[in-house]
Amino acid sequence: MGGAGQSLWSDAWLGNHRHSCQPDRGAARRGVGRALFDATRAAAEAAGIDRIDASIGADNADGLAYYDAMGFRTYRTPDGVIAKLYEMR
Image (tube, rainbow, N blue to C red; front, side, top):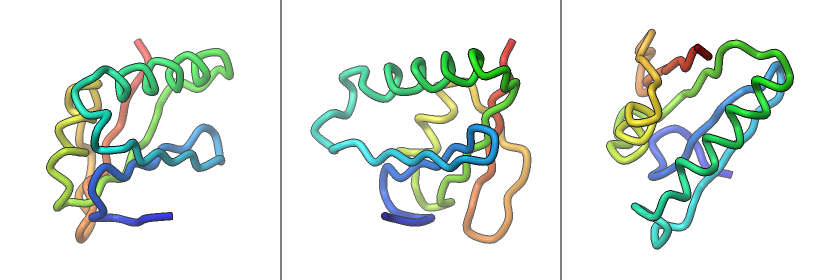
């Protein structure tokens, strides 16, 4: 397990469950992240969840760019972490 600030580390909570993913850097720019998020979003929708929360290390530029590209918005910035939210449409 990694933590805040670790490259390509992501956390998302579905209900009260934590799901984490740390793709191999060789998978970058091949659509793996989008496919993983599409599956996560579909599972959340099927479970009736209307929001996905992600906490990304403030120094994780790749992770922040990924979540921005997936449509997350920043809603708070506690020390060393950027908290982002995705709202189902």
